[in-house]
Image (tube, rainbow, N blue to C red; front, side, top):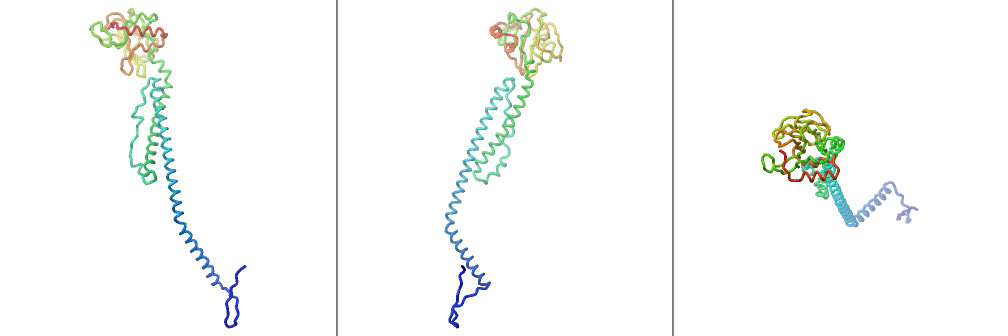
Length: 323
């Protein structure tokens, strides 16, 4: 029910009803608006300190919460890096060792690390900038390690594909018929030289046999040399690939020529007494990446465990070499 206003009229000595025009209504509405604004201003002024403190408190809670999340994220990245390090170790010491491959080069694992530090400047003006920059660096480091590890695994896959070829190529049988193990005359290591009478490294194994006895290729490969070589006399050298080469020295004659592909067990030459030799025999060497290694470790294809132990025992005796 609207309120009616009255005004006293001194002429008529009566109260008369006041009629509001459009200006009166506007004035009345303006008074209401002004009162509302004044009231709101007073309330805001009174509540502002509380609102401000609540805002600061909530903002601080958000900042602290963000920092905790960043720290947690960094820990997760460190765990990922540890797992990646274990994968790298297995790759180098297990997967590649199976194929006798060298570890993946460290300079390739670290390829691209470092770089321009200015790229992290964009993080300097944000909250917890140091922590954010550390996380960015950690992510970049992990990404580069993952790329390197992926490339390493690609190489391992290729090694797996060529596993059959490797098994056929690696020297793995005795180079002459020695079923009764009686032909082993001298093993690998320091031995007395029969001519110079001094201790010298005997870089292979000597097998006694009659001149003309067949000599077999101990693994698949390509004949690198079938010719005379100082000290070795008539020699055949086979390149088996994968870093392996074998030498068959003091031959009487050849059954192969340079560039010829041979299979394990093929007759490549015949025992003789050429070069620096004191009697008919075969001097046999296995070399990996140019370094002479003990051939006794490469007879696993034609010896039983008992025979293999016997060969190791015979080859370790300090006998005199035959050249």
